[in-house]
Image (cartoon, rainbow over all chains, first blue to last red; front, side, top):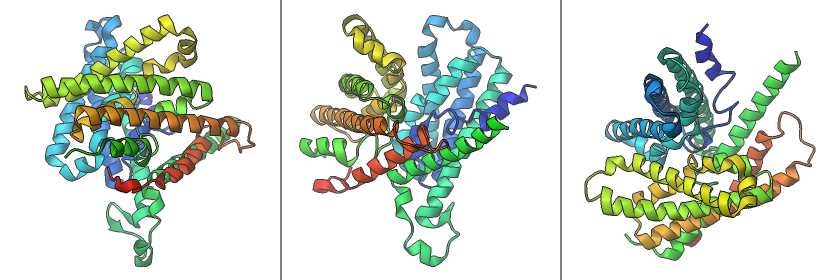
Amino acid sequence: MKLKYFTSGIVKENPLLILMIGLCPALATTVSARDGFGMGIAASFVLIASNLVVSLIRRYVPNSIRIPIFIIIISTFVTIIDYVLQAYQPALYSVLGVFVPLIVVNCLILGRAEAFAYHHGVWDSFLDGAGKAVGFTLVLGLMGIIRELFAAGTVFGVAVTPAGYREQPMLFMVFAPGAFLLIGILKSIVNRLTAGKARS
Amino acid sequence: MQLNPGQVFLGALLVNNILLMRFLGLCPFFGVSNAVGTATGMSGAVMFVMLLATWVTWVLFHAVLAPLGLDFLRTAVFILVIASLVQFVEMFLKKNLRALYSSLGIYLPLITTNCAILGVTFLNVDYGFNLLNATIFALGSGLGFGLVIILFAAIRERLADAPISRSLSGYPIAFVAASLVSLAFLGFTGLFGISF
């Protein structure tokens, strides 16, 4: 069933926790739940759109110059989302900053164009892109939720901890060391779970 | 606003270290920091490409894109310039420095998708640096990248011998170590009043 192209991206081939690609935005833009999901959605748009276009024109792209062509396609969509965010979500854009144009060098997007969309049909490429996009966005959002919970005592700006915690929260999590520590812990949990599966 | 070049250099090297504070270039950071030798080679290549890319993109942006009102082509133009530069460095190393070329292996083409280089060229434009400050910023960032990746490779060489539980070995313990190194760099915050 073709649906496995979609589901494999969420769990079995999760871009961040299994394949370990696209780390820069995952650590830099997940200071709050809104920023994490915002970055995930922006990258998802580019990933799905570039997968669609690459698979549509794959028969007309000569093998030797395929990478520059992929890069031009990807950077077109990155420029679109860059200007859309700047116009309609200025607060989010100011937090994500340089990481919006940097979606263009996210290894995940070029990797899917090269490894999947260039060899598969439009519908399959859409499913593959959407699955990887959902897997990427969910992990980014999860990291954003955890970091915001510890560093501010809120989730999506809604207070969920007692007022006493919010006065002196664990600010460590909002800084760079907290991001590295969190992804280390998440990855070790994933390692533990996948090791258990391999044994049984 | 023109900043003191010394502040720009220290800001890029320590206060806002490109790897540990700005989170740019993490893929090669975890990819080649297994051994000090490869880490040194990789940081040399990154430094060289970063400096060249900064000059080319700065001149292109201020002499061609900005006067013609083509700012929106920035993303596409910069990435293509960097991709061709990397190709050039690869051919140069292949011909003249065979040993280095074989030790870097597959990571050299990956410099194209190294967000550190593209990130530095974008930041140079965003901060409105003049050519001198842009050069110094690129130099500081490249040295900062090299400093951290070589320090970290030394740590990981020790980690390889340490008894680490199975689910933590490999990437997770590297992330935890990176967290501690980055905690140390957090101590540079506010050094000499540098805030960018």
